[in-house]
Length: 164
Image (cartoon, rainbow, N blue to C red):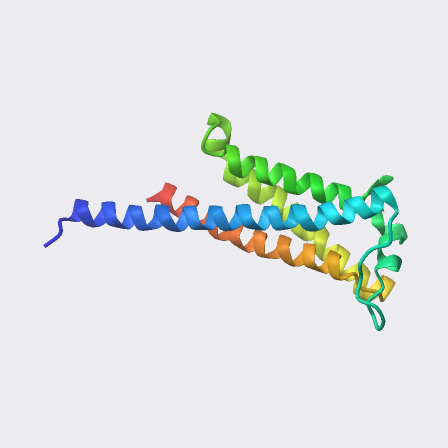
């Protein structure tokens, strides 16, 4: 028969493993996002032709060269790459820096929320305004969406653990 303390410790261990798995999943998603946004940044920087699905609604050149592909003169791909670097740094350092131990998950969530909202705007731009799709861009938007869902779950678990 287990005592209440042993049961609590087992529950805490399971919750810690789940959080570590969500953190690991977040890191994997950040690496995938760095790959995709890195490729988009490389294409923007070097002006090499992009590998893209041809025909139909897929037209990477239209998306990559539209007026919506820059924000204040900075290519969106570069901004996406920077966001993934920041999110990755928060994840890697959240157990090492006092500030990030306390506020890291909330900061991660806030940056991810903004990135997700902006990505949803970019999906709208592709589907409605440009009527052209970029598979690389849609892959980024999928990654940031999954990362956002994971960050919501992580933040919810952290807040529920703090209130207990």
